[in-house]
Amino acid sequence: MEPEKLKEEVRRLKAERQAVILAHSYQLPEVQEVADFVGDSLGLAREAQRTPAKVIVFAGVHFMAETAAILNPEKTVLLPDLEAGCSLADSIRPEDILAWKEDHPEGIVVAYVNTRAEVKALADVCVTSANAVEVVARLPKDRPIFFVPDMFLGAHVARVTGRSLDLFPGECHVHAGIREEHLKALLEAHPGAEFMIHPECGCGSSCLFLKPDAKMLSTEGMVRYAKGAEAKEFVVATEVGILHRLAKEAPGKAFIPVKPDAVCEYMKKITLEKVYRSLKEMRHVVRVPEEVAEKARRALSAMVAVG
Ligand code: 13P
Ligand code: SF4
Image (cartoon, rainbow, N blue to C red; front, side, top):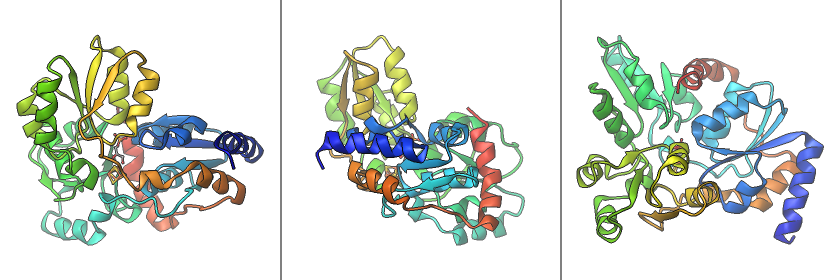
């Protein structure tokens, strides 16, 4: 089917099914264009709760659809391709949490939303990159904290809050690949540009050493910042899918990717064709067993309430 016809069919089926399409900012431009809402992990989790629609097509990765399903057991959540996973979420197992808890019975487990439901079920609170600092800053000062699974985000949170955190050594392969040398080259070529860096990036504190006024932001934070800032040129350190949204929402400004091949192949599993098939065949339904969902819901409810 021609792309324009496909978009038309998606819109028709969406109305017929009384469905909404929620898309992450790393999705392909044509998928973002048919979405009712495009946002970061926190915005998407909240929108899934807010929408009166009974069917949610989640154009994102599995843990995001799972989060929506946990928070909204009465809604049908569809993921157009079950292979849309996440290397970061796959890096940690429930056993890793249980082992730490055994050594720290009084400890607090903070799980990044990029985790599987079974891991969230063992966490005390979940966070996204948009509210991790705020959530951790509010935790009791006298108890040990295990931050899982992204060590770069964890190090950023520890730096900003001044809290000492036990970090799990997990990483996102896309962001971990964004290194100091990529940034260095652009610093010289664009001396007047503002730098926006996702806290999952592998350069972490060395990026801040090179560019102390760089902004560490979630994807939504980047869009908001670019819209409001005076600057006309921005260097962007994250997955390149965000560039479509930035160009659309902050027109007239230039956005330079730190690493043009920073592409998440999992996010790109979702195509317009698959969104169409998902609506047509009502697949793939993402469900979480209630005994896991019930525990994970507590940690997720604390997450959506902050920031
Ligand atoms: P945010 O959109 O929440 O910043 O997360 C980035 C990410 O890597 C999602 O997989
Ligand atoms: Fe996971 Fe990284 Fe892809 Fe985000 S960009 S979905 S963290 S693999």
